[in-house]
Length: 327
Ligand code: UDP
Image 1 (cartoon, protein in one colour):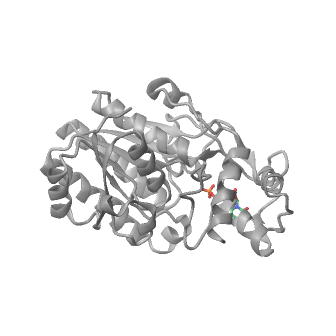
Image 2 (cartoon, rainbow, N blue to C red):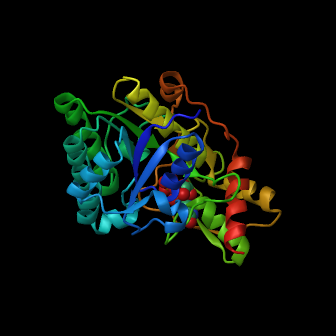
């Protein structure tokens, strides 16, 4: 592809950010990563690309954008734990909302006109139906989801008033890892299903499955698991859309296919060749029974197609990374 477009990526040392940075570099982009390393890892990005900064540092961000002749921003930096947001909402509004406002202010100062934003399916709360269309009501049920809605709102006004165009990508269940095992999911503490199942296989300690009395074919929750590289590619398509003069918009990023928790357990057993130790526990508060994306808008308007739409690739790549990590 060989273009050398200059992109600033916040939160580029985290899970989805680092996979996106790697794809951008492979496709010839010139990337500067801003990360305060509070959650991300230094080893996830080339040292020469990393600027250790918090997104609250407006002046320093603007300076960096000027120095690097930044054309567009991809904004991942945020806190992501729903449960924590129910206990400490102030941290979520400070980091996710005020932090994003600081970033947008820096963009105005440096005259950067385009931003791709990490949003979430949590903006829909408990949707009345699946698959979920982008036009469904916005009604988050926790401060994490609300913080993302608030940034989507900021972005609408920055477009209307300042002409900053934006794409909000509403992620479903990001999962999997770099197919070559160089990067993967390393949240601390880990709360996501697939890495927990893989850890259970390695340690022998059972995972708790949250509820098996839902109104689904096997009683466990249905989610739309999307490979992190397919998710990363959606950001690159969104940048090209905006830089090419495309309009602002909100897009679901999911495959359109749902899987139950027990289907994921079976996929993990097939890939690893081992039994997953698990027990059934009570439902987790706030878990909707089924969250599946309608992904037609992203396909039609940004030309996105998943490369790894099957569960086996997702689990195989996650397993490759988990095994490597355990040495
Ligand atoms: N889940 C589970 N046990 C766990 C973690 C997750 O049964 O230890 C279930 C959870 O209830 C949900 C699905 O796995 O139905 C995916 O959860 P995850 O936390 O990975 O993502 P979320 O859908 O909450 O964003």
